[in-house]
Image (cartoon, rainbow over all chains, first blue to last red; front, side):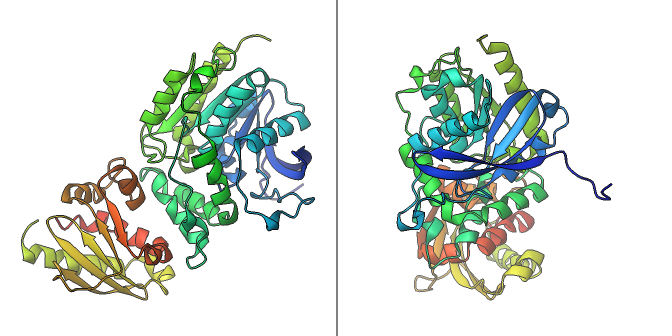
Length: 287
Length: 131
């Protein structure tokens, strides 16, 4: 019998093939029921979902799965390619393939996909490209287009990249969020500089669904966007505008929270998440 | 706040608050730079050496040197200095992306000192804005 308090969250690795890259993917999971697949933000890792993973209420009805995208956290870059010989630039095609391969490898049935920031933008890509594979998507802090963050500062060799990344995203959080959770989010960001910029190639450059959101059928794959009022990159107005272009699209504004809601203030975020889940369960067509 | 006396009093208080700050004391060993806070109605050069404020120049003359500048209207700095600040006035990135703040000069020096600079500017929420 262990003396410490052991969390019900467990970690696993699963190896998947993504466009020829052999990726050994680390994921955390807890709960039972419909899979709720969670994508962290750019340059970060799955600990952003730490409180959701241990949420006793939500994990009664959902199998919460939070993975590290390749090159993040405990998911290495692919071992079968010389990845150091080219600049990492994440594309929408690759990101979408990674997620669908991951869901296939775990044989997930009708999962809900949720992601924040670049994870939210890829949620829109999934709803557009693979609506039949998901019971719904929850794009958090997402929009049709989010320019302006693909910057050289994230990897400038004359500055401390860890601190530039971490303090560069500090303003994306609401000052009202608990200091400990903001500091933890800062700490995670001090670990991911090498992936951050390449992730932002997807976030600010390759992801561009302007004029295409009307192609998403939110009645086949319900879409609930949620955005915090302190997010200066994707503002509530950006997400509301995006939701309005999606057939059946739904938008929830989250006051007094920022760009990393699940990580910076989970108690506030969870009330909106529960609203989003109720919306999806009520709107999901029977298959 | 409009008198020179009030501006000088703020400078003294800001220096004390910054120099006594636990985070800046813990992490400021290499925090050294000179920057301009242009607040429209008034401006200030803050000279920092190894984490401590060496000097604050109130309303500097035309030939006073600094490495980078943070420029915004007095109204923006007042909102930035509220606790809590309203959305989009809550940091220099937010206010540059969405409001009238601009970052000018040698931004590499700004980035090299970003961690401590971010903390130091948040201390405006302790002292209040000097405009």
